[in-house]
Length: 181
Image (tube, rainbow, N blue to C red; front, top):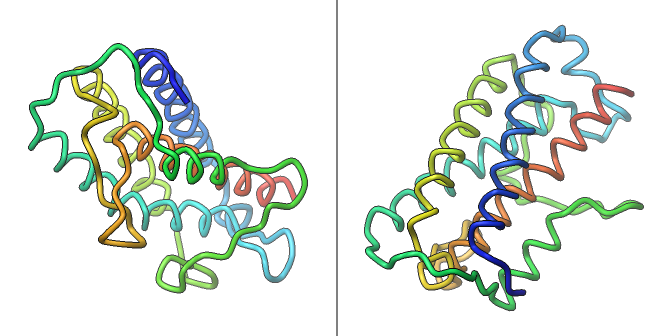
């Protein structure tokens, strides 16, 4: 995939801003609604956000670290890597089903969660917006990040942003379904 770096960043900012606004709205909902499950094995809205918080803890610090340590200037175009593009597309929600299993340490199922989960998610979305702003001056193709599931695999910075933000999108949709169930 080849895309203007500026267009990719604007698209990712738009997704992130929408996620931030949804979370702000959800702060006004009752704990009962936020803890409601669509079925006995499905995550509730707070569990969806807590799952994203777990990943945000890793990726926000990783993205910040690599951008602070790189002096590679931005390029007009971002070129997605084969693996990064695959992971990013995999994160987008599917029309029908598309259920994915998560790692045990990233699974918040049946944890006793409260609205502080939303506050943390909001903080992370604001940090992501700041990082996307900083990324406007960075090379999204040549700067690489580690990934949470393997210390040997690295993704291009633009792909890492896509994976994280599309993953957020997937679980925001899942949280909406839980709230409306």
